[in-house]
Image 1 (cartoon, rainbow, N blue to C red):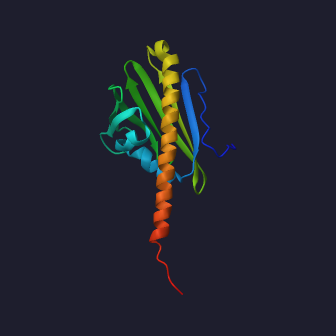
Image 2 (cartoon, rainbow, N blue to C red; image 1 turned 45 degrees about the horizontal axis):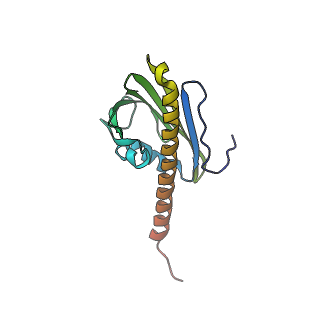
Image 3 (cartoon, rainbow, N blue to C red; image 1 turned 30 degrees about the horizontal axis):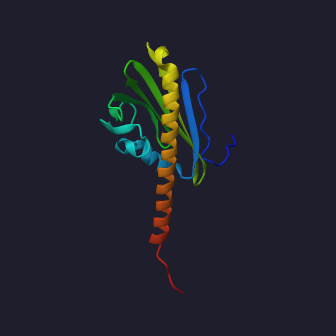
Length: 171
């Protein structure tokens, strides 16, 4: 799939209860993985989150919690983790079940296609689906833009540091 090399790749979801956003990041997957897998740093890129924590390692089955900026507590569980490729977590917000999927695909040595999606379900989800889709689309678009900026800054910092750290030999 050919994608333009710009940051305006945000797409709204596939089905009535899904949200999907995507972006091309000028960074290797390893930088994105470092950001994803460090839940305590989530507020650096997900501005709707005040704090996040995992109660164990970044692996399937680990539980944790995010506190949103509006004060709501959102318990979560890592459902699947595929090292340096993707992870999926479930969360519960009030009476609504959310499933967030985070995927990436290396396009080149320093470009990665990143996709975040969300599925909304649960017994009362039909009441809030429209509002929640709109809110999630906005929040996830902002979060993905911030993730892109952070990963690109860190990738530049890493490559600049590596260049500076390389000793020069005068001839």
